[in-house]
Image 1 (cartoon, rainbow, N blue to C red):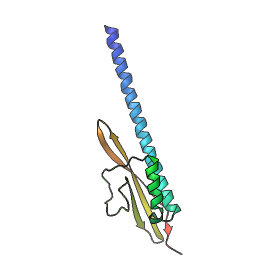
Image 2 (tube, rainbow, N blue to C red; image 1 turned 180 degrees about the vertical axis):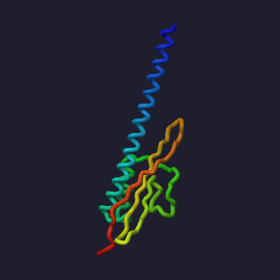
Image 3 (cartoon, helix red, strand yellow; image 1 turned 90 degrees about the vertical axis):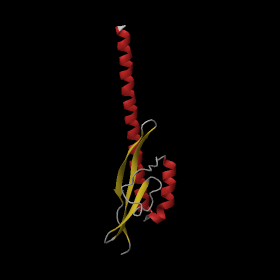
Image 4 (cartoon, helix red, strand yellow; image 1 turned 30 degrees about the horizontal axis):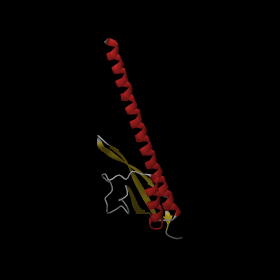
Length: 133
């Protein structure tokens, strides 16, 4: 009887660590996708010299990449964001030499049984897009 209880405990312990390992991998993959989406949006804005020119390319990329669109608490107000309906926020900022954009994507941890835990913002800025010389 003692060995049966020990075997059950060992199986439960192994299952617990497998669940923790799979959860860690899922979080790491979701986090890396969020960084990749943020970097690609920044690249597209810089390539097409502004959000207005890059908007169709950004929307096409986000729809094809499999980015989980977080609907959580955006730390930036909806009036400031150019687009925050697809789980990312693009904020247009100005400097003395031109304008630049701050792109914020959100890592969302939404588990089936537990639900949404939280959203972590991941931000980055473009280089300055010059208005003219």
